[in-house]
Image 1 (cartoon, rainbow, N blue to C red):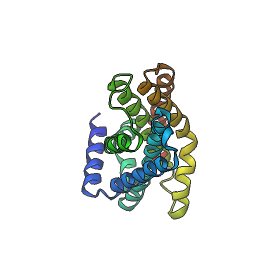
Image 2 (cartoon, rainbow, N blue to C red):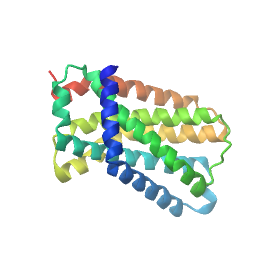
Image 3 (cartoon, helix red, strand yellow):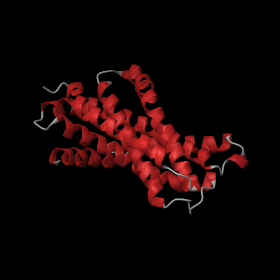
Length: 224
């Protein structure tokens, strides 16, 4: 996994030296979270399904915005062409790039959690242990990161407005099942209800997204 680690560390360093993409995604997620809290009646805000749907919708669109920023940067620097010429396996390239999106979404969730408690009255003591809720969030993040990385690479050759429109249009049909599973799974965990049915769906999504990404990422990059 040396190549994956090197790609992740290099991309992560660039992200934090130039945090415009992360800050834009964070501000966008905060606006979405606040707008949904204002649109929902006050007596509904404390329902776990409402808070978790707002939370994961914010993360979903922030992940798309973050991936669009990385695509624009890769086009400017020619990163994709450089990766296609390396001797590393396509799977390692894919997981290295995907890990950047995964880490960014995890940091976003940590930043958004206080706002979720403030706007939606989310209880700090949930029905299930916090590790269960964290596992649901990380599982959803993994699928989001895999799918946005894979589809973002496919749209890397597109330019301008067509790329900006195509990325959400292409990703949303694949991300919506993950969004629903994560929302209901986290809501059930907060309520103390069984999470396993939705955990199975998230696990299946993780495995399939990782498998498809590792097998096709090299072809998308043009790697021989």
